[in-house]
Image 1 (tube, helix red, strand yellow):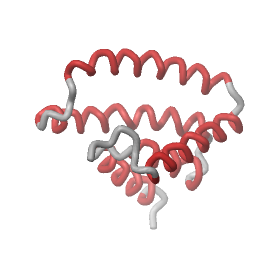
Image 2 (spheres, helix red, strand yellow; image 1 turned 45 degrees about the horizontal axis):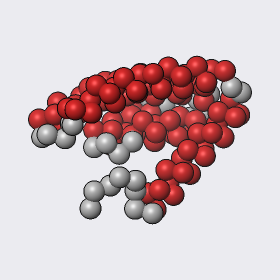
Image 3 (cartoon, rainbow, N blue to C red; image 1 turned 90 degrees about the horizontal axis):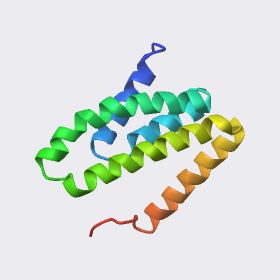
Length: 123
């Protein structure tokens, strides 16, 4: 198998999952750090670049079907931009090992929330 085929396959699969809103970017980050040997900060940067086109490709379909709450759009985008800037600053300021542990704790927390039925999930 070619050196590029598995990363292409993982990128395609996580792109589809991102379109469904599953969190494909997080799965891509786990793949890059745990299996592809990419350093945590570099993987996070790649993940951010990956998310932009993936999100932009999914947005028209979600908008068309009424899955975008327009009243929350600007406040959420503004808060997201501010928190992304703060998170990027914090990620570059801390040691890589601490960053990995924080990300691992985040994944465990999300996993536990999903096992309990998810947060804010409509029945």
